[in-house]
Image 1 (tube, rainbow, N blue to C red):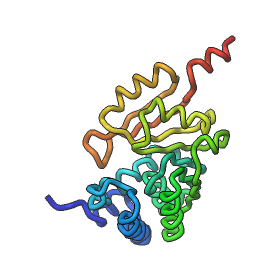
Image 2 (cartoon, one colour):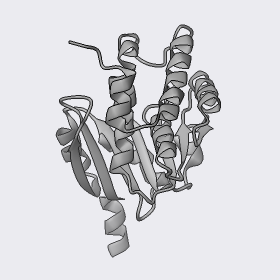
Image 3 (cartoon, rainbow, N blue to C red):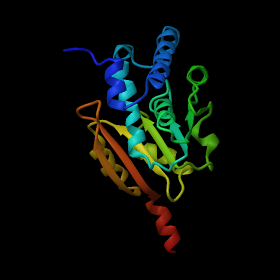
Length: 217
């Protein structure tokens, strides 16, 4: 089977030649830095275009077109936040994506990747608790935590009309059921374009059950 290549990504993600070059710059940096710090699973680096790039840009299609301020939790090597920023720039969507990464070495990589690609992104080398109270239009994450834990982290960044877009695996339905014990939310699941058992979970109306009870008293 032919490997999924840059040209396949450009076609499927509908990005320009210039934006594809920015993704290639990012990929080159990732290969260089991976030799010094563990940014992604070593066995996944060769599958950058499908497993990382295409997988990540899916969040852009699930987010409201009018959304402007994004928070990407546990950005690591930039997935999905940096990929979404580059694709949004290509489509003329005026976003500012905050890449939140507490690991200082990974944050340093992200700063270099943002500088080299010119992505509309801001690197926040901080724990999520340190930016609690700031609110965003969209919150994203990939391979960060099960949904119950993810909701606990995202709650402090959430406003009434915030939308969460989370890249999840085959366990997502069980995660949704577990999260529903403590949280109220609406959700929509979309099939992943990059992984057969993956799902893109869009979350709206997030609120704790105990907070609802407190308001009712």
